[in-house]
Image (tube, rainbow, N blue to C red; front, side, top):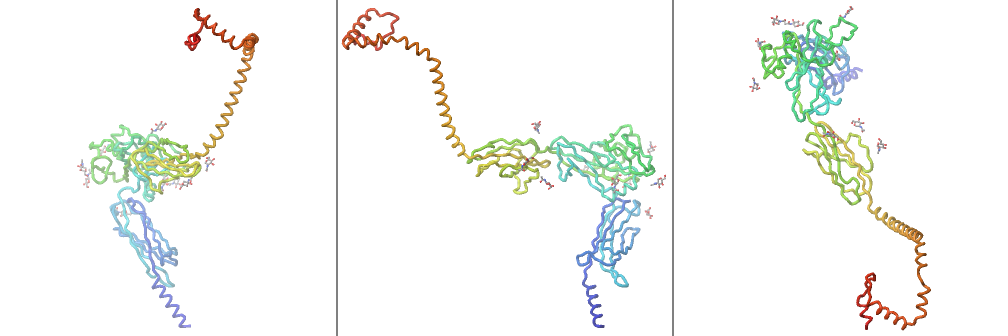
Length: 498
Ligand SMILES: *[C@@H]1O[C@H](CO)[C@@H](O)[C@H](O)[C@H]1NC(C)=O
Ligand SMILES: *[C@@H]1O[C@H](CO)[C@@H](O)[C@H](O)[C@H]1NC(C)=O
Ligand SMILES: *[C@@H]1O[C@H](CO)[C@@H](O)[C@H](O)[C@H]1NC(C)=O
Ligand SMILES: *[C@@H]1O[C@H](CO)[C@@H](O)[C@H](O)[C@H]1NC(C)=O
Ligand SMILES: *[C@@H]1O[C@H](CO)[C@@H](O)[C@H](O)[C@H]1NC(C)=O
Ligand SMILES: *[C@@H]1O[C@H](CO)[C@@H](O)[C@H](O)[C@H]1NC(C)=O
Ligand SMILES: *[C@@H]1O[C@H](CO)[C@@H](O)[C@H](O)[C@H]1NC(C)=O
Ligand SMILES: *[C@@H]1O[C@H](CO)[C@@H](O)[C@H](O)[C@H]1NC(C)=O
Ligand SMILES: *[C@@H]1O[C@H](CO)[C@@H](O)[C@H](O)[C@H]1NC(C)=O
């Protein structure tokens, strides 16, 4: 009994010794000063989520140290710390640590710990998202054919912070150093029709904390809020309020910011200080109002014309043995990438066809040939895939290859049939002609004086007839009338002399 107990204890200790604990620590920083940083600790035992009862001891290294201890039966623990935007918490890197203890019967035993660097920033964190046709643009190109929706996407913690604290959140939009207006919903839409032009988009988010007496932008649609005492961010229409010069004398920092952006040079209103990088002021910056929170986001891109107007010319309809030769042309901005997929029979393109396999050919001009020899006489569909940096088109072409032998058979049938037809037509014509001219034949027959002639032939002997003809010749000769046609051959009269 005693031995058994000892073995169990030993096994238990052994297990204590060999189990490998690991805690994974993450945070959602960078976070703007004033915001809340969320830390997450995930505990693993031999690579698997740990189970048991744990103690998580949290600690950060700010000047006014934060610490907290959580007892939990979960292997995941979170800690949220709000760092006030005051001198005690200057922006910069900080460190957080978590130590994990596991509970065994009577007491906690330290298992593992982890440290993580996180960052508090002066300005709002996030990114500029460009969307076209509901598609998020990841590259540096925009299509010249569609408007671009620009949106500032703040990190969740920063958005949460200003959602809860700010009384106004406005975004000022600049394209190529030109001020385009202000919006309250972080979004702005603009088209870039000029092809192959570089653009720089900048967005300045300004969160103000003045009491709710702030002026709403001019095109405010008064939304009926059920709780009027809640000081939310200014509810405004999504339209961009254009800047007006009448606001020039105002001391509002936001408006000063606008002016400074519109006028690219120093105009005296804004002292240029290097604490805030600012839009288009040559190496300039804006002295920020310390009572506001700013966020500056920028993105560069190039507008390009999408692939369009594909035309395909060539011999779609070819006899077996001929080589298909098509010419494809299209319009748009270079560089073009293209490939083709050949399907037997009629194929409905899905638009999902890609040029992944095989890799596409490239060209600066959208003009290229397709040559191909087809074995089998049948229909084929060629899906031509062309794309450039901003658009893709899949264009199907149906090609028919026919058997040449079919034509020979055809002639074998056609020629006899045609010949027969011609023969029939000729016969009909002949009969018709005969019927039409029958009466004339009859008249002509009646004109012949057979009787006389026959009697002539009957009663005259050869000699008599010879005599007749000779005498006739001699009788006519001296008096040839002009009406009488020339007798042929002319030598006939002389010949009769002999
Ligand atoms: C900053 O805020 C914290 C929490 O409100 C406060 O304890 C601390 O005294 C403040 N520091 C300064 C310099 O105001
Ligand atoms: C902030 O407020 C906006 C609208 O008022 C809301 O759409 C958004 O979800 C809020 N974000 C957070 C993180 O609370
Ligand atoms: C708004 O006012 C009502 C009473 O007028 C009050 O009960 C409520 O707590 C207030 N809400 C806030 C967020 O101040
Ligand atoms: C603007 O601010 C200056 C000092 O910063 C002050 O002298 C002036 O009276 C203010 N003007 C208005 C219109 O508030
Ligand atoms: C500019 O910043 C410096 C410190 O960086 C400060 O001493 C100076 O007063 C600031 N100037 C203005 C006009 O804010
Ligand atoms: C702006 O900065 C660039 C280098 O970053 C410098 O070459 C240029 O002279 C500066 N311009 C002004 C007006 O300070
Ligand atoms: C494409 O073709 C249409 C009509 O055929 C024409 O109106 C349009 O201008 C063409 N597009 C381009 C980019 O040339
Ligand atoms: C192609 O689509 C048409 C109508 O959209 C359909 O009638 C036909 O059956 C489809 N053909 C194939 C091969 O899927
Ligand atoms: C095209 O691809 C998308 C995503 O890969 C898929 O959801 C869709 O069903 C595809 N469409 C067709 C017609 O295959």
